[in-house]
Image (cartoon, one colour):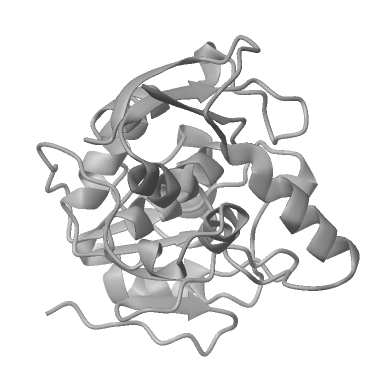
Length: 248
């Protein structure tokens, strides 16, 4: 049985899954590392393990206890940080970094790599904007992104997912929209799966939407645009001129 090791963050883990799918079914070991946004001890998984275990190429999810593994998915960091130090490839997406670190074809990312059973049809549009409550250097916001225009266009067909603090900040700065509290990442993924469109910033929920190949609009973080995906149905929001798709 293959074993995979990854330290997170959660979005990084979701972006690594095309590599896991390629190599084949195995156990996924989550490492609690000090160099990520938060150390992913089991109490911080927030249902990430439940979401991973729904994938047909993952047998089990458990805590990494310093054992040897078949594939170390953290290898992408060495290439990423080396390139950033010399001012290169800052805008390459996390999924590209993972794939290239293992010498695999980038076409692995072209088809959906994430599935969930029983989608929840909470709304046609899902909003998600992380950041409130975090350290400033972990707030991935773009002041040029037109969230008010997004709200005006979609709020009658939308719900917000995320923490209650994230929701309160969004409601107070953008406008009223129903809140759909989710108990864990698996439930959040089910809500995203049941929607027609996802709009959000660089987050785990964004990578869930991308892993499902949902139609999406991304608020690009200018200081670290590592989630840009260029495909039909994906729109990158660099400034106020972002194109907002119609709901058909």
